[in-house]
Length: 366
Image (cartoon, rainbow, N blue to C red; front, side, top):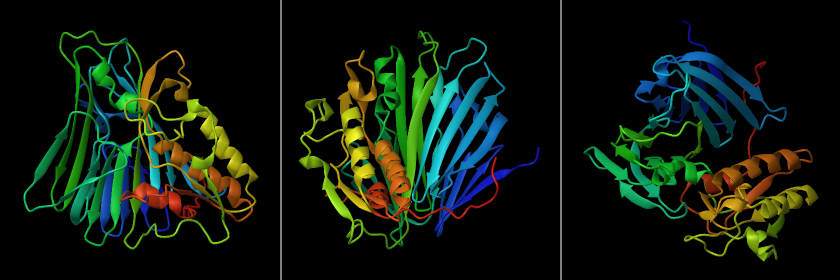
C-alpha cells in the first residue's frame, strides 16, 4: 500500500500526517522533531489499522487547517479510531474518539504516545498547569512516573527552543480511571539528551473487572516556540486592552473545587460569552488580560448540570478563543492577544501573546 502524507507547512515548522502506518503525526522545526504514535487498544496497535479517512480542510483565511482521520484496528473486537486535529501557528489540538466494535469493550488503552527528538538541555513538568518543576537532562536515561497525568510537559533544547505537550480541557477523562472500579492508570516520561518519550496509559482494567460498554474520548494539545521567542511585550502598541479580572461577572463563572483560586474559569458559559462579546466589539487589535491557567471542578461550566463535579481546565478554550478572535479581528487587519499577566515558562503563553501567522500550505484540498 502506498504511503500518502498530508503536508501542512507553517512559518517555522512542517507537519506530515500519513494515511498508513506510524506515526500518525510528524512535526519538524530547526533540529527538533515530534512524533505522535497511534493509540493502543487492548494491546493492538493503531499502526496495524486500516485507513478509512485521512482528509484535510484549510480555513479560507489561512490561519488554520483541520485534519480528520478514521481508522479500524482489524484485530480483537475491531476498534474504531477517529481523530480530529486543528493545526495553527504554534499549536496543534487533537481529539481522539475510540469505540469497540462487535459488542466488545475497551479494557486497556495507551493514548497516542509522543516522542520528542532534539538536543535537550532541560525539561519541565507541571501538575497544576501553572508552575513547572524543571530538571536538567543528564548523561543517563531517566524515567519519571506519575499516578495522575501531568497537565503540561515541556522540553527545552540547547538553543532555547521549546516543545510542550499537555492535557485538553477534559481533565476528568484523563483521570477517569480514578472513578472506575478495578481500573488503574499510569503516566511516564523517559528522558535522554536526544529523546524524550511520553506514555499515557489512561485505562487498565483488571481481568475480572466490569468494563462499561461505552465510547471513549480524550483531548490533548502540542505547542512550540522557536529560539528567541519572548513574552516581554504582548499585543501591539495601538491595541485596545481589556481586563477580565475587572469584570463583575456572576459567581457561577468562578473556578470551583479544591484548587479554586478566585479567578474566572474560561470554560464557564457566562465567561465565554463575555470574552467573545469583547472581541466582537473591538474595532481592531485587542489584548485580553485573563487569569493564569487553573483547574476547576464545576460541572455546570461544561453544560453537565446533572453532575456535581467534572475536573477541567481551560487551555484548550484559550487556544480556541485565540484562533477564533484572530479570525474575527483579522478581517480589519487586527488580531487577538491573550495576556495572563504573569507570563510563564510554557509555550502556550507565548503563542497566545503573539500575532498568529498564516500557514504556508496552499495546495488544493478536499
